[in-house]
Structures are given as structure tokens and as C-alpha cells.
Length: 380
Image 1 (cartoon, helix red, strand yellow):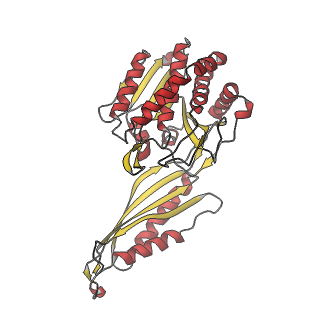
Image 2 (image 1 turned 30 degrees about the vertical axis):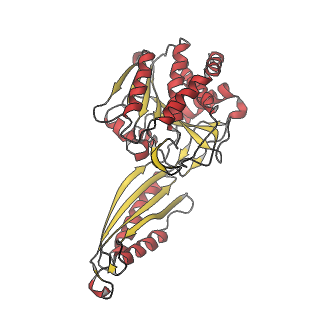
Image 3 (image 1 turned 90 degrees about the vertical axis):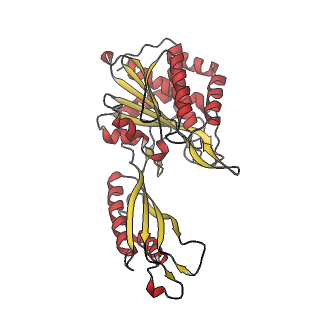
């Protein structure tokens, strides 16, 4: 089967590229992927694959096979883009590779369909909205999409610093990420009489120092830093009475993240309110760290070797970046889940407005995903 997969993918290189370019040029931001969802539904219609959409939000789930005949395998891609300035203009932009992920998942299924593959089980084709908000996976969990899944595979293009073109890893060990948003309320006063006010700028300075002073286990990778401060208006002679701040927190383990959030909230509240100001802190977004599924990693390792050759197999990268894919495993520990790391020579980096990569890697991704599905639903 693997030889037929390789042949089909290579013969359809231009089709993969044109689909990628369409998705790239028609990017849509989180929760507003209306036309993207419509396009994916049309492609599933062409493949004669039934699907489910949602009244509450975007995204689509395809169904191919029968769960009574074997395990249920989920294959997932994110569908949202970022909103960022590109060459001087604000626009929806696929600078995280979600256009590539959709293309690879769509054509992994298309390839198997065209080759006459019959799954001994059920394939759930998961096109998930709003990954960039950290809440897209949770939305599908609430819809019950994950309740019956046994195996779950995702894929993500990797920057050149981690993997080069032609390489692939059976997992990506993402870290946990939490973004905190804080507000500070003080009292306005004339700049000549600061004693009559409560200066939120002083509070912001204390918040920055407090965050930098928080310490956790040094043997586990973790960081916390203030990434936004804002206070005052256009006048320099007014003691400002309201300010905002943002904190980016990273940790390689979920337990360390929980401890770090608790310590930072406490430190920020105590230090920022020392001058009498009122502090409010809330979690704006969060993503959990990857939890390894050795069984599925072994299967994907075999698929990488069969699809690309033994020289292509690379060690799973450990990255402080976050991915809401890992909420699925966190919420359903029984699921065997992993995310394939795909080398693409991606530069300058993920989320850079001018990110680009070797489009030939689309073929490699399709080959790995197709082979993984065959191994899961033919051999097990």
C-alpha cells in the first residue's frame, strides 16, 4: 500500500500545491472561518464523505468507515489564521501553517479514497476552528467530538531551527502556555499633587518586578514575563487612574504551570496593590503541555520510516510554543494522541508575517498521515 501512496502523492503534487495556495490566499481568523468551513465541506462532498457542522461555531467533522469494525481514528487540522500586519496592511494571515495542515489532512484522506482503501474502523476527519485562541479544541470537546476516539493524530510544520526539509518526528513536545490580562484601578490627580491620587504607573512597575522575582523549579523549563503595559492618556501632567498589563507564562510541564500561575497571581496582586490600587487578573488564554502517547509514537515512527526512509526520522522537538491539540489528551487520558513534527525549512519562524516554507513538504506530510492511518486501521 505504501508504494501506491507514494506514487499517488507524487503524481498529484500540483493539486496539493494549488489547494494550499487557495487556502493561504483566503485566510480567515478564529471563529470566522466561514468560507474555509464551506470549502472543506465541498471537498468532503466530492469525496462522498458524510460530515457534521455546528450551529454554534465554525469547523467540520468528516466520517469515513464504521466504528463497529475497528477503532476510531481522529486526524485533525486547525483552520484559523492570525490577524497581523503584512507588508504594511492588516489582514488574516496563515503564518502558523494551518493552511498546510488542512491541505495535508484533506489529501491524506483523498489519497486513501482514490486508492480504494477500506478502513477497518472509523476515521474522524477533524477540521478544528480557533486554535489560535486556545479555545477551539475545548469547543469540539464540548460538542462530544472526542468521546469515542481511540487514536488521534495531528501534524505541524516546524521551523528550520527544529527540523529541516525531509525530516519528520513522531511527536512534538509542546509546553504549557497561559496569557494573563490584568487591570489596575487608581485615583486621578494633578501631576503637581501626586499625594492626592493613586498612580497606576507605580503599580505597573511593581508588577513587573514581582513577575521577574517569581522562582520555580530550575530543572524544568519555564518562564514568565510582562509583555504589555499601558496607562495614561495624551497628557503628561495627570496621575493616571487606570492601567493594563499582560503576562506571558510558559512551562514544559502542566504541574509547573499550575504552580507558576498561582505564584504570579499572588505576587502581582500583593505588589500592585501596595500603594492602594485595586488589581484584577484573569486568564485570557491557556494551552496545556503535551502528554506523550508512546504507543502511537511508535506507530507514527514506523510510518515515517516507511514513507520517507529511515534517514528522515528525527527526535521529537521540545518547544515552549503551545498548541490546543493537547487539550484532547488532557481531557480524555484514554486517547492515544500525538502530533507529527514536519521538517519544512520554515523561515524566518512561525507567526512571522512573511513566514514561508518548502511546499514540497506537503507531499511528505500526506505520505506520513496516509501511512499512519493504514497502519492503524489495517494492522490493528
